[in-house]
Image (cartoon, rainbow, N blue to C red; front, side, top):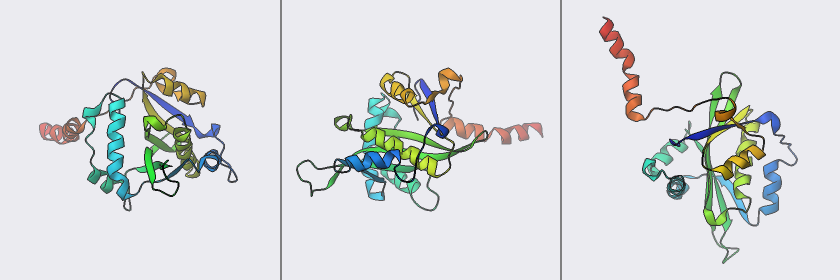
Length: 211
């Protein structure tokens, strides 16, 4: 999660139509399948996922905040109750059409819940390596996450973007996303681990003092 000033965006799925015969993502992928593909994260991808997470943090000017490890990603992303879900983007090795696929990006998301609307999906990260941008991969990944949200009856998708990333902001607004920070005056707060630990013991301390 980004701690610099960030804008909070939301996309209401009532503005997105996905049909069984030709979803936004499916149409894009069919047209570009020879160039790239999108698939679910596998445990063996976690090492490269850590590298891309660090690359994204470098781009955002926050490399020191990355604490995640390959082991943590393996633990939290798989099993009966995963804490996150992730898509991986791959391209063909340009030197060989029969060669291995190369990992070039990821989209991490998880489900949340809003008391006003019910089910929601949160897009934590969307990252494409610089040399592979401008090829429609990022757009296809984001529409794939949106499709997953629609299929799971989510009412909206939310995410944050740093306020200096004007290119991304313009793209989101172009696709009918709402800037909650400016339009509805919402501010995003968080507690780090130590502050969370202290706050978690506040009730016990209050009870003791009141005895």
